[in-house]
Picture 1 (tube, rainbow, N blue to C red):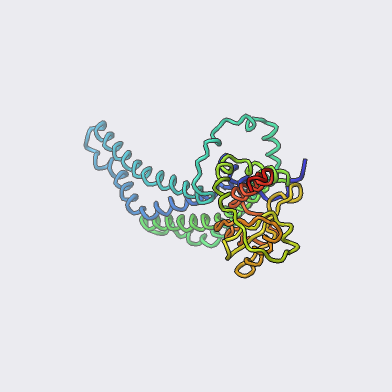
Picture 2: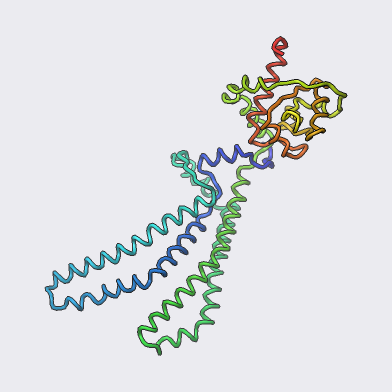
Length: 352
């Protein structure tokens, strides 16, 4: 089996995305949900504390009423307070977690990910994943987070120990508020520090995701061949064939003789492409020019017998690429259709 050393193509990444295979970490949505929910509760603390205080003192105000009636009123009040908490916590945490997930890979609906995969139930494959490098990094990251929280608690406790020991000397109402302030301070520090491990975990997940999608040269060649034979490409051949033009002759250039076609815009940009099956996985940008250089390339192409194809968008897009680089995914379908058209013309001389 050939070693997979090539970066995944955009099509490979898109196909994996359709299956729900994306780089994501659960730490970021969890952390965002905790932070925003916590801050919302802090901002509503005065109001919530007033409602809780009413609930606590309510049985005392109903002392002279029958037990059953008083109990039902207290129960209704407890339901009301619980409803307030749920109506705040659940929507905030849900939508924040959703935004945290979509923020990593964009909006995604992948029905294929819902299909039952019996390979996930295979104990041998699960055991193999248990000792993989990805699982090891997850364990190390969890150890790092636990150690970080422990160290922070230790440092904060040493700094706040004197303040904590003075709390019993305060009046009850002041002591209660001081405890809440200390809790808010410690919670904010811990949540802030957990941001670094979450970002680190996302970077690691993205690294392992791209590593898992790596391809070998044969896979890249096959992907290009599949795109060349795509039904959509075939339906567009006639339209693209109308763009074939010729230009005035001029002296030949050695590099131009290696080109399969010259894509022009029509005189501002010119890009030459060459593709050698078995040598180049994809068509390569072999030459390009702008302005006078483009006109010179057009003359050379005409004199060398290289087809000159007027395609404004394609010429501008290919011109942005470096010399010697493979064409990108954005232009793959169009270039494949042009090569198919040239092959048909070569096999049918009367159609030229």
